Amino acid sequence: MKRLILLGASGSIGQSTLTIIENSRNDFVLVGFSVGKQSNKIPVIINNHPSVKHIYLIDEVEAKKFAKKYPQITFYSGETGLETLVRTVDADTVINALVGFVGLVPTVAALESKKDVALANKESLVVGGELINELLKTTGQKLYPIDSEHVALAKCLAGQKRENVKRLVLTASGGSFRHLTREQLAGVSVKDALKHPSWSMGAKITIDSATMMNKGFEIIEAHYLFNYPSEQIDILMHDQSVVHSLVEFKDGSFLADLGPADMKVPIAYALYEGKREQSLIHESLDLNTLSSLTFHPFDADRYPAVAFARDALKYKGSYGTILNAANEVAVYAFLDGRLPFNQIEKIIGQIIGKHGIIEKPTLDELVALDKEIRHETTLLIESLK
Image 1 (cartoon, rainbow, N blue to C red):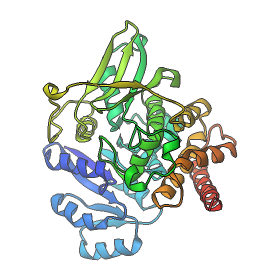
Image 2: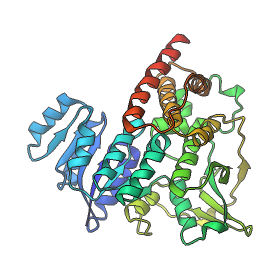
Image 3: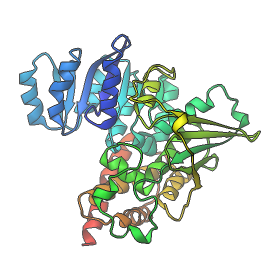
Image 4: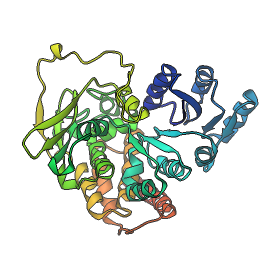
C-alpha cells in the first residue's frame, strides 16, 4: 500500500485526488496533507482519512487551535512548516497540487528525502526544471506528471522509439476569451474570465488559460519531462478539449489521447505510476455523441504569453523564475480588480526586460529572486494607477 502526502488538498486537484484515494483504499493511504486558507475542510478530510497524522496550514494561530482539537495529529505552519512536513513524514509519494512558486521547495524536499512526486504544480518545472532533473538523476526518484496534456503525451510516447518522433503537440482550448480579439479584451471582467469553456479549475490557472501562459508553461514542462527541444513542441487549438495531446511521427502518422475533461483520469494514471486503473470518472467519453472534433492553428500574436515561455527554454537559468513571479503577481492583481486583463502580458514583458539571467542559480537564489520580482512587479502595478 502506497503512503501519500497530498499538498493542496483543498483545491480542485486535491479534492479529485481525495476521491480517488477514498475509492482505492487497498492501494493508497493518506498520511499527511496541507491546505491553504480553507481550513474548514480539515475536519472532513480527517473524518474520511483517519490514517492522517500530519497536517500543514498557513495560519499559525489556527494550527495551534486545531492541534488542541486533534492531539493525535502533528500540525505544521509558518514559512518552513510545509518543507518540514515533506522531509520528515514517512511516505512513498508526495502529490504536489499547490499553485505557484510555493510548490518548488516541497518538490525539491520530496526528492531529496527519497520520495517520488506526482506533480500538478507546473511552476516547479517552470522555475526549477534544471534543478529538479538533476535531483531525479542523483536520487533515483520518480516524477509523474498530473497535467492532462503531459499524461496524454506520456501515453502516446510509451513504447515508441525516440528517433521516430517528429514533434509533440499540446492541445489548447484557448480559454475563456478564445473568440475575442486582443482589442476586445480591454474591458473583460473577472467573472467572465473565470468561465472556462471546458475545465473546472482554480482561479489562477483559469486566468493563465485565458492568457495561454498556462500553455506556455506546459511547453516548458514537456521539455523537462520528455527532453524534447522547444522547436519540437507545438500547440494546436482544439475547441472540444477531447483530444488532450498528440504525438506526430516521422512516417506522417499521429497518436492521440482522447478522454473526458475530468482530472481524475490523469491523477489516477500518475498515482498508479503509468498503469491504467479505474479513474472513477463520472461519465466516460461516448464517441457516438461526438458530431465533430475541430482544430485551429495557434495564433502567436493573439497569445503573446507563449513567446515568454519559449524564451524561458532558450535562456534557461533564472528566466523562468522572473517570468513566473511577474505572471503570478499580475494575475492576482487582475483577480483583485487592480489590473486590466489586457495589461497582464505588458507587465510581464516590462519586468523581464529589466533583468539579466543567472545561468545556474541555486535553490536559495531562486527563492530570493522570486521575492525580489514579486515586490518589483507589485510596485510597477501600483504605479499604473
